[in-house]
Amino acid sequence: MKNFEYAAPCSENEVLQLLSDQSGQTELLAGGTDLVGLMKKMIVTPDRVVNIMEVPTLKNIEAVDGGGVAIGATVTLDEILAHPYLEDYPAITDAILGINSMQLQSQGTLGGEILQRPRCWFYRNGQELLDTGQISGGDNRFHAIFGNNGRSKFVQSSRIAPALCVLAAEARVIGPSDSDIQMIPLLDLFRTPRQEGQREHTLLPNQLVTHLVLPPVNGGLNATYEVRQGAGPEFPLASAAVSLELDNQQRVHQARVVLGQVAPTPWSSAAAADALMGQPLDAQAAETAGLAAVEEATPLSHNGYKVQLAQVAVKRAILRAAGLETGGL
Amino acid sequence: MTKSNEYTDSSRATVNRRSFLKGSGAVAAATALHSPAVEAEPQAAANVVSGATTITLNVNGGDHKVTVEPRTTLLEALRSQLELTGAKPVSSDGSSGASTVLVDGKPVMASTTLAMAVTGKNIETVESLGGEDTDAVPRAFVKHDAQQCGFCTPGFVVAVRALLNKNPDATESQIRQGLNGNICRCGTYNNIIKAALDVVKGGV
Image (cartoon, rainbow over all chains, first blue to last red; front, side, top):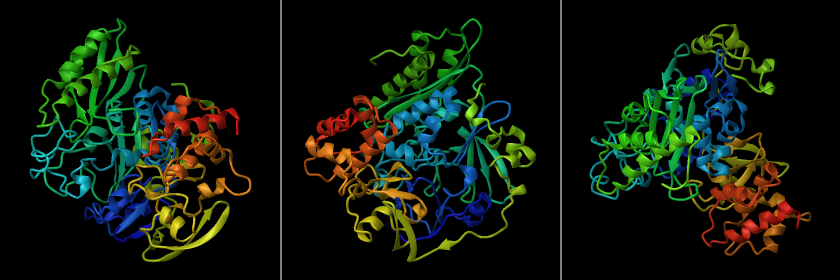
């Protein structure tokens, strides 16, 4: 690991003061499950690491007046799982349960989980994140099947981000100056890098996500389903989160479908959501929505199999939200 | 939306959405959500540390001084300065679970934890489960021959202890699920599960 300066400030203001406006010079440390490993491999080499775990305002889960929940960026995943406020948000708890490692759940934080760096095995072995031929001409079995026509062919790795997106969560972002506060819809937090060195999110280097704010679900249904190779802690091959609202005839009148592990950002599928609109929530509607979700997939040379897995993830997330989940593919 | 009573005391008063967004106003200020505008803290810059620094780590119930750089991991401090070599370096990114220790009672990977980040916290290593009054978990591992090469064993022992502290009546499937963050390349999982179940049943 390259050596670096270290600071553990106790307030949001102090965090902002310690951050550089140059990308890569300072890194925020929360649980460390991703950043420390990347620094050991010299893939990430900051001059200063700012530990935000000592900032008390980032550690709470609070009810928001008028409904909804605000979760601090450094709340750990096991704290989220155990919290009664999250009962209405099974899409989030499904995703955290899928992470399947006590250590990652008790050490990892919500902010760190959604802003973790890509798990692309070329990137993690010291090659460039964007394609220079190593991905398109190499073993791309775990890479993107959507949004991959540019040089970004990695997949966004967060397990929880698709759930936050379908739940219409917003990130509370502060900085660069003390008075700059904004609420960013989660889908807008992510972007597809177009040149080397660009991050996978739209934050400035000296901005900080302080909270993720969830609106109330108002009786809506939501769920996440991950397709994984086994029951172990490995990353899913495809995942989907859905949120659905039914009218009084039990037909879908609002739907959001966001896929994970298939594109350089969480991948919102308007086609799948449209396919559900006006339909009764049954196996046929789930099947149709799954097919619609993958209609425009553009797999690479070795990941065509992910198209069916993404389709199944959408179908089963809908069935799970509806309480109709059954075994098998 | 009905909320559990235990979270509706005054210290967790609800926060108005608008004041939350703007970060100003009495409601937001009354909660922990300090806004920059009403931030009570003065401009005191946080202490920036660089180079070798002596810090105190509370390990297995005692305070220990160690000299570390910001990049020193907890695992390196434990193994090379405190001679606590139970936690093992296997994967550099924590994916093996072999460096599992308890920090404030929770299982974390010492290999992905910076030493400076755990000052003031209660660190327990596998060594705290040994000694004259050996804990039931390592005794059960011996009884059930739950190790082969043994390199993953300390991580598994600490993970089982953490799991059973949280859920003393864990079922076999809960134990299998809970130990997913630990890897044994010899494949001695069955005996580890047997050992953990024996502790649940009070057999050791």
